[in-house]
Amino acid sequence: MHPDFILFAQHGWADNNRQMVALAEDLATEDTEIVTPCLNYAMTWLRMAPLVDEVEGLALPVVEHWPQVPLRIIGHSMGGLIWLEVLDRHPEWWDRVHSLVLIASPVGGADLGRIIDPLQVGLGIAADLGQDRRSMASRIAARINTLVLAGDVDGGSDGTITVESTKVPNAQFLCMEGLSHGAMRYHPWVVETIRQFWDGEVFSDPLSIHPVIEKLRQIPGMTDAHLRDFHLSDPFLTLEDGAIVRVWRHPLGIDHVFVVSAQGECLYSGYVGWLHRGDFWQTLKDLQAAATTRRESQLTDPTA
Figure (cartoon, rainbow, N blue to C red):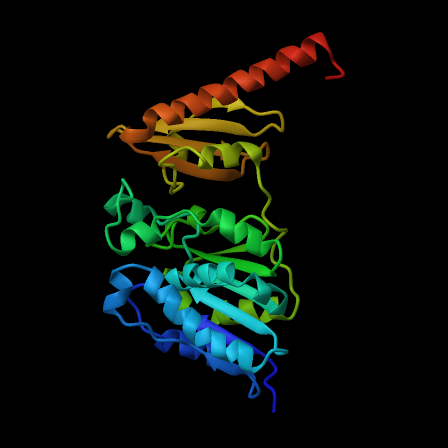
């Protein structure tokens, strides 16, 4: 008898699969094939590529054994990043994926990873966790129904990764206030939200790509930031859509940037270290010059 779905649920860094097994069993029907790999604990501290190879190796025979059965994929933290890498290797699976749920996954790069390995020279798992996979995730989310769940216990993070780092263009997004990084592995609210998502409930419009935010993200060394220091920032530039770019320098010399919508919602927060300060300010000056040119053009030619 064929299963109704193949459900993959993957744990993350410095963890085992116990909580993900419980999550999957709560969500599955009696006809669901559950696959919840338990990765070697020590290996999760080294590099991610062997972990991606392992998950791919376990998934391949299952996917090929039931070629007509749809896939449901859930990844917590690094488990979500592993599955992004697996899906990137197998675009032929995308049409079979019913849904992808990324729980507390630092798709934009974990700031802790960037702190440990600021030059991205390859210091263990930190280099992999600090990598920005948002472009990859955005391509996947444009084809696969994707939900991003982020926890928030302090106004900007789940205690381990920032809310900002979880955001994926083209995916739905839900911030779950009060849930920590670890609690999100298996929590009644998470279980019910995934169940509702599978049933077709929409939790947000797909996250859009803001051109200025994309330019900021392309600055070398740009890291998604916590919102805690937003109130200390000063306006730097008002954009055509009414959004405001704000800046702030930490007492240690770390430059921060925030993009705030015309309605007052913080759309982006990021920072760079000393090494990339020149790139940071050059990009901001370029944005400022472009905005000035557009305004002058509109004054001389209102139809422009």
